[in-house]
Length: 390
Image 1 (cartoon, rainbow, N blue to C red):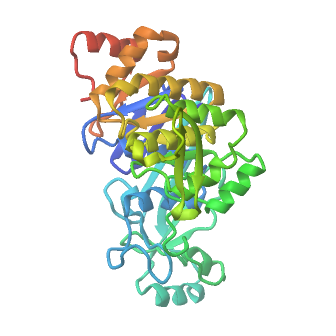
Image 2 (image 1 turned 90 degrees about the vertical axis):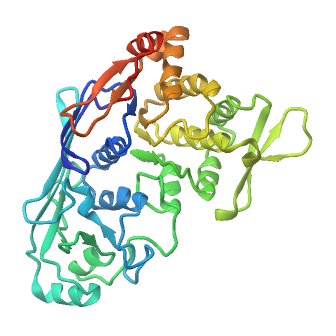
Image 3 (image 1 turned 180 degrees about the horizontal axis):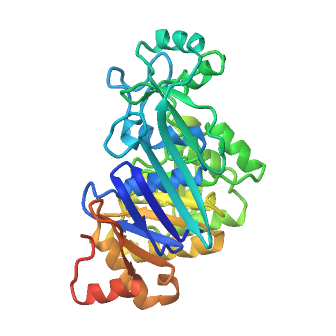
């Protein structure tokens, strides 16, 4: 479990410290304060320097080639310039992310240098993408200590889908299959089938990202099938009962993008589409399923209270904290909601042992470090009507 995070030159941050992390961490602050950028940083650290981690957040944010709707002949053409503070690609630009745990640190770095590729290999690539590639990007980390392979990149920041393949003398391959949105929200950056295959072999996915757009129904169905008739099935149902106590069972009907979740309510003979019970129900389902498969890893949730009424938030926090404890998950979440923070004050009053697992970090990208509040601090602030969100 990470106890600190230090960011240098990444996205909104020139230099920023996030110290004194706990099992569950809520990031608050004004719009454009850098909250989601911190989630991106944690994801990248957890993925350990793999090249694939570079296009996870740009695809979520739609930082793509503006001349196309997001999909070109070479695959996703991702604009990586926004990963660097200052939004520029030039020689010497870099970022560094360090997550501490105990006396050690997990460090991921990315730097830009002049392109050293063999011109014989580079010329066909330039012809393919239609722009010059004067630089190359080097990504390092515990899972890629030698920074291989360096990837040619344009001065405009575009990482083209075929780049890495062509520089190794392989045939062009896109980064993502056409129109495949199934990977959104999945930090492992693998296809649904690959993720499911890994889980069936008891290979944990290191980090999961649940964005504001939610989770694709087909993906939720695929991983729900792994939970059926296991103890975790009851835990997910318990999460849904936060909003509707009458829910008894959950099932998915259909396949892929046509998959729909249905629930059985106590005293009702007819099954009911989960969506008929509101967006908050769908959000809780995604949170509960993602939590289960984040065991011994990290769960990132953007806008954790999306779709949830303030009366359910204390119960939501109970579920998140108890699940994180049981499954050994570290949670990082964002929120703009005062109700979400006040729910922690209520939790501090009702269950201080659970509340002790949570800390609130006020983020301001113009400051050198976050301002941290414990749940006890939040209770005092709520009692005296003190604003902690910035």
